[in-house]
Image 1 (cartoon, one colour):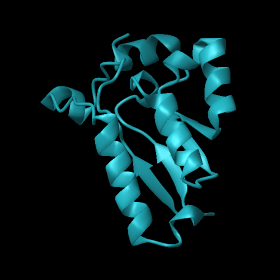
Image 2 (cartoon, one colour; image 1 turned 60 degrees about the vertical axis):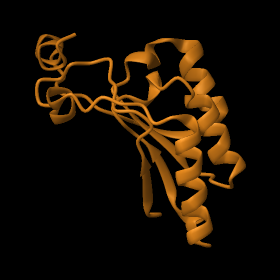
Image 3 (cartoon, helix red, strand yellow; image 1 turned 180 degrees about the horizontal axis):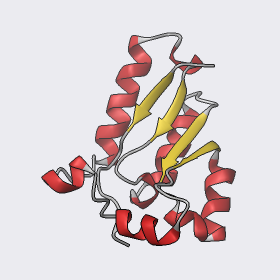
Length: 127
């Protein structure tokens, strides 16, 4: 299995999970798209073997990042072939959005489930 690089474009989330330290401490922010591109470009210039790594886009909730598709395209254009997204899955219920993620180059979805019991899940996520 390839090593992973985790990119967190945003710490904003569409859940209010009771155990989330970032939500409770108010550490909600978006990196600007230009900041993200610079950080990734700097990583690429520092490590010739970086394209062997798997990219995991996390957060917060990356599916609500305003330029998520631009970020994915930039990563693909930069030579990354294995791109995954770590998500709470809420936006994946929108078929066209989920399909667009797949078509843009997402190879894996790492979906967080806090309980298989819907009432418990809603209590945890506060949604």
